[in-house]
Image: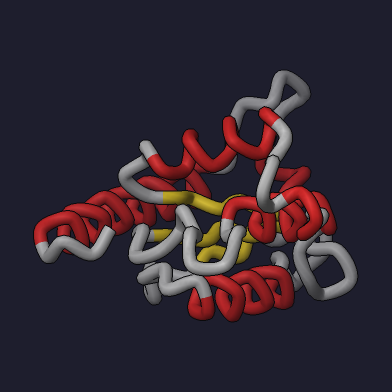
Length: 142
């Protein structure tokens, strides 16, 4: 993010903004870095929310999935991101909260989710998120 480029943004910034603008909702999936989100995600959020007054996130429904190789499951990243989304006026799915702990053990070497409990939970989460999107589309907020 470089505020000096707000008046003449690079093409990748415009592509990101258009992608978000055309989406019905935004699902954020993030690892946890030092109890927060990775710098590259924060930078992308800053780019898409600029210039001031022209955020492509305004009133767009959102949900967060955080993960960690450790036992806490990205709790810090989830809540740090939730703060930003609140400021950006994104109605963010309150429940279920998704913190995937020990995430590496949930997948096989090919990247296939093999943990049946996690699969069931994530299916419920996505069903709930779809209803959240529908609720906010019906009310005109997102």
